[in-house]
Length: 135
Image 1 (tube, rainbow, N blue to C red):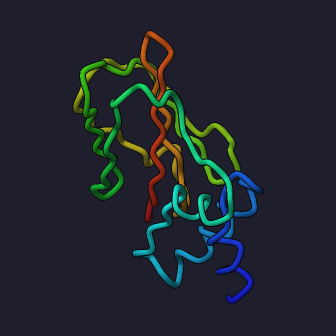
Image 2 (image 1 turned 90 degrees about the vertical axis):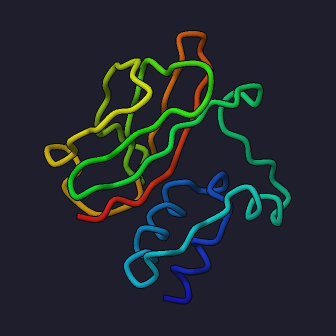
């Protein structure tokens, strides 16, 4: 567990697949752990930034049983959504311009773990959000 913890607390820009896999395993014993990638990377001398820094749009994710509740915060509506697993593999994608959505994930999220929701606007700006899904 000590080695998993050391990898989980690394900047994900060094070795994303290993870091996210370690965090997935670490979350089994420590489910409420929140990794601050900005601080972790800064401590290791790496600048961490997702998407276009000029956008203030973001998507909040919450889980209700086998459904994800998505809420867009910001002025621009997102159009394209993609969910990736901790290995960076595309799990699901869809288009929607709704600011509030409920998504049934029972058919494509079969295991608990760390996932990444990526949302993109028509102008190309993006927002990414990591979330832990528990089955």
